[in-house]
Image (cartoon, rainbow, N blue to C red; front, side, top):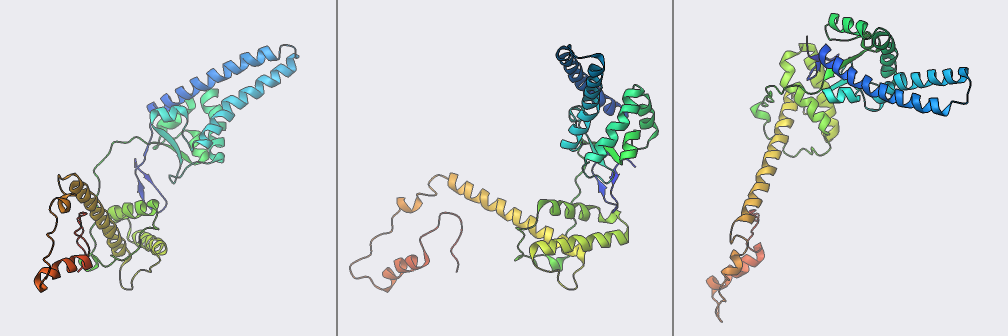
Length: 303
């Protein structure tokens, strides 16, 4: 299976990297690291010219380990799996479950890289990557990591299934401002791929996501509403609000750009009533003052 699957059987949009792209990324990293190592070695050779051979050898070994092992480990830890070569090739190191790596993962990969990449000129790493179904080398196997491609070709976008008709508009008063984007993304991924999951996994994930969503909104899930239908109805309500918001912004923009739309009341002033106004002539201005001036924003005053 080419795609990455989590422990909850959720298919992630990440694909394992293959040998050619990984070899190119490693070559770029090695070129940068070896350049830094040579420059540091030359500088230390000049600085330690007065020291004895034992001290110079100890310093050389320390610099070798610091640059060739400590450098890649520090870079992968700080960048969460993106070294310079991987960044150039669109790759990234992640855990088996798709999460970002930590120091221990980078340390194991760096230590094993000394043996299978530097010690054997990459022969062991190439053989392990070709044998592995996910293209993993020995360092990835021992560290529990995987190199994936971040730049993948965009596929067909799956639409979120609509909610049941009896739930449309039921959550119009729900406050969705406290729901983070990560939870929305997880809900959308579940709704678009829930038919691919096992029944028990599908039910447990729906229960967990609906509980998280209810905790963020402050309103519990209504009794008798299935969790999946509840998630679909809330997502549908959010999409409807986004559509209304965009339509309102476009309407105000179009009205502001229309010639004479804002200055229409000034160009045609209301005639002054006579000295002795009757009921018909005096009632119109009074009603306009009570209800508000004519609006130019596109929103009619409430009835």
